Length: 159
Image (cartoon, rainbow, N blue to C red):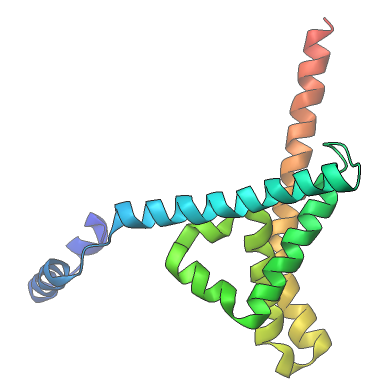
């Protein structure tokens, strides 16, 4: 609790906050970091293996192997989400499952599954894009800012 909020509490409330804080279980930060690192690394290793597979057996090059790799990772993530596996993995690994493409696919798929009883348009579509909208807007805005910076650097480099 911030010191500003704590100053507004009565002495009894402050005592209770101290009492509750003393009995709060400590989080296993090191274990959580190790689990996140391992699971995130496994997801990325699977992605690298898929990329190698597409390059070896389908004659893709490094640039073109990325698209089918991402598609397969998204499909696996959505499949695991719909079967309920992804939630168990995420609960154990924490932030390790938030590797961008699989974590985003899980978020969208779980929103669709959760709200399918409300109908396909307002339930599934509406709630999927409630989550995806800010991510897409932020991505587009970030790309715009990076492009402007690149244009300025290129202009300054030509002087």
